[in-house]
Length: 497
Image (cartoon, rainbow, N blue to C red; front, side, top):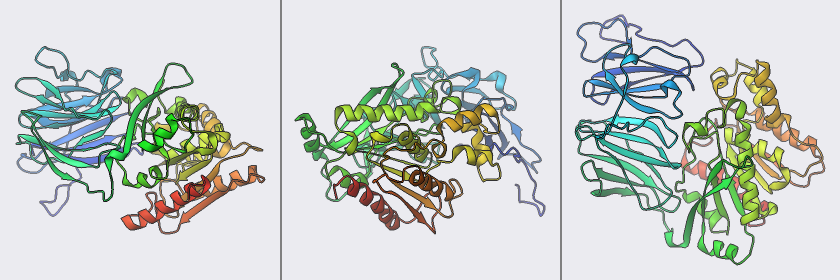
């Protein structure tokens, strides 16, 4: 909207329910962009901030094409575009003149030797681009780890920022000025609390720690961390896992003991579960538990191919997500623990993961925590009157089509509860005002689990927050109280309380 006159002007709108919209400004302040995108297709329009007089319409950077995603930034009088055009498995970095309908002008950005710096291959995934006066800063992934690269526009040299630990989480902090000689990044790992670091663009060895989160009573030397790979049941896919533990706990394992293990997963929307720091894990670690994050398919840890069909974890290959998780659980019982000491946890789509996993292998887990779980998949996805449903069809498929309906019915937790099985102790949570996963989903799943196995001695409990939405408590003290409920149930059922 342009409000310099008494009558506002509508510049652009998106009427397709599959698409979300956003507005942003280029870092050099020269353009305002309007982006419309689904999970598979996007289009970006722009208007110059330097236009004289009234603006009547926005122009398209490139027309919408089915299953072509692209994003745009402006700098140095050209568009910088990251896109999966030509069906590349990951995003490639391209440049084009700053003009409308520029798709035919897109060219790969190259280094000093004429090699594309990001060509969309399987090895490197590109997530975002920040265009500065002297450098382009790229965020992405390589080897399953978040990475930050700097590209000198004049010398055409690409440099990856390196850190000492083998597994970590790093990301570019917000930048509002293109004219800068340094960037700030956030850094943490499963052992290292979060810190903000300023890094010179000309010499990345020049680093200044701006701030580090204080964790009272935490002694890093008491803990250890590993990054391992688990072979999936297909015999070829390597599933990364991040592991954190107290060193004295791992000493017990090396001596032949079995110890409690807590397995966390998500595996949807191409979202990544990072090997980051969490002070709230410490109560579990200090009670002798090993904490494991499974970077399963359906997430984006290994690039878009980890998420997209035919071998990722969406649409008609969604079962890979659940199979990977169960395969990791089996690995853990062979290596460190046993089924009566193994617990698992997931939230939202991660709750779907846990529901599907305990249906597939109920005897493999002792405790399951399902936070606001999306467990009634087929029923919810069939009803387009529910908020967000139609936009989710490009994630799960549209169950109004027979092929997708049949596939969903094969994994939807609500429709696959086994009778006469000993399910683990389950703790389910919901929010009365949740617009994403309605409160009746955990309620129905709780009742279904109880009804199918009335003689199961393990408790199936549900806690419904009458004032919460999808993300539970908004203030940190209530968040800690809610987390205390989860951990109390977990520790009680594992006899660690």
